Image 1 (cartoon, rainbow, N blue to C red):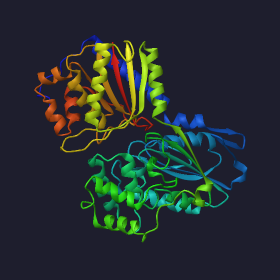
Image 2 (image 1 turned 30 degrees about the vertical axis):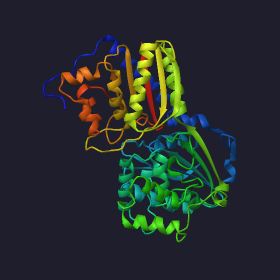
Image 3 (image 1 turned 180 degrees about the vertical axis):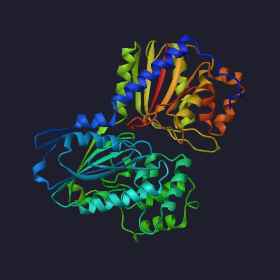
Image 4 (image 1 turned 45 degrees about the vertical axis):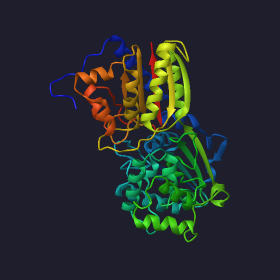
Length: 454
């Protein structure tokens, strides 16, 4: 930590300007992927006709309209729906992360814990399940899905407790497993995920609006696919736990359920071809592609030659950070892949294998790992941000690093190797005043990494 009374080294003009530009680019990315605005762009009303994508619905043909939702962006999505359809909404319920709620008139907003599920989320899930059981064939359900929904809507399968699910989630989040692997397990421990929510709502007509936080926007993976056929099996879930050597660490009821499911003693999640999905249509309204394009356009307005390198970035955060530093060095020294002033952009989501006891998140760890390769370079900045404003269990969205980061750390007797080893990037960047804090952003479309070079 920063020694008492020792201020961080001051930043010179170009360093400050690069940080200002990075923040402006981030703001533009968030605006382009704003969940509320994305709903407004994709959901239109023409009199009594409701249009979403290629789907057109006659509102007069439905007896009741229900609105349900779950995820970090669900409350703001519901606000856009209320503004458009408030006169037709019969009732509804959304559950979002603490501090992410907004006041609504027709739809009840509940808040719950994330990333680990809590009792408030379980209570909300039970209430939502009861609401959906009321929906009949002449009802329309608008379902608002966004990242974080897996943790915020935890309804344990029969024979399991919330504590069982929390224990498994903790182990998976610390293991380095990908979000798809985590979800393959969670679907088979849930009474609502992996298509089960669609079965609860059947035979109502269900239209889902989805803000994607999974690379490639696979509908069966976002929020663990509550409205989608599940291509994974109990056997897949077991293999994930075996791959990360967690099978003997999970609670015995979890292991027993997965083993019974793999042997056919427990019903599988709903699969493709199940008639419940004939009454469901899903529409992705925002993703990391929108954020990256918004960032690219903003960088161009600031005078940078901007290039989106990928929107499929994944891997261990510290390893990706070293690659990001290599790209930054190539830009500074070789003036490629685009001529300076340059902005290189990458969207996606890395993972962290937690070995230490520090605080941080995947974005902060990526940036800390990149700092070693940036040492001594001038006119360059690396930044990585979580678009929901929360990187790991911290109040920061991400962090900045440049060619002076290690020198400024040394001046404060901070050893970056030690901070990286104990997964403590938050304390490192807090001491340097290089954390990025945005607060809740109203969206959740993975992460954005950028390199600025002048």
